[in-house]
Image (cartoon, rainbow, N blue to C red; front, side, top):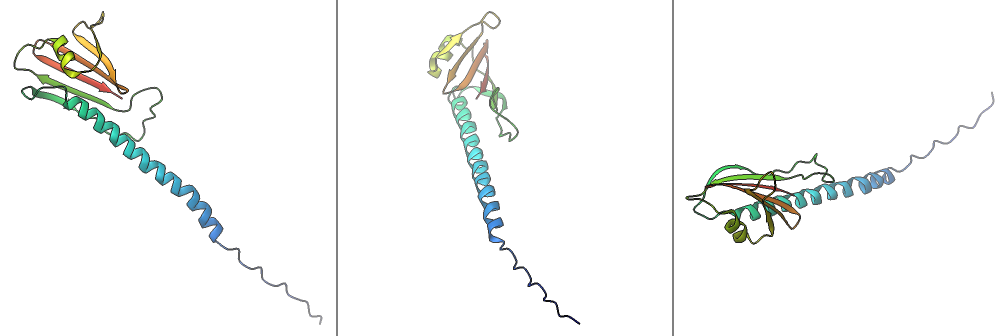
Length: 141
């Protein structure tokens, strides 16, 4: 009987490099997700604050569709947030006076909608339309 030498068991590879590699991938992704969520919340807040400053206090809000954060939106070719509001004023509204009161530079009237004004404010698209005493607002970022 010949005695054969048994090979020594291989030492276990340490696991910490795998944990370190996984952490170096996962932590930046978590940071990017949190930063994107905060950025989207800031955009929504900016839209709402601009819309809140347009209507005088005596106007009645008839309908509103507030923007929400959509995590599936990719903002390269379209807006990710849209805000709609409709008000009823106590009397007829003059579009030119409304545009002047907002303080935003907007072009009044187009071939298709002479009763509307549109423009941009800090990369926010604003469109106001007036029909006698009804005012509608459409905003996109």
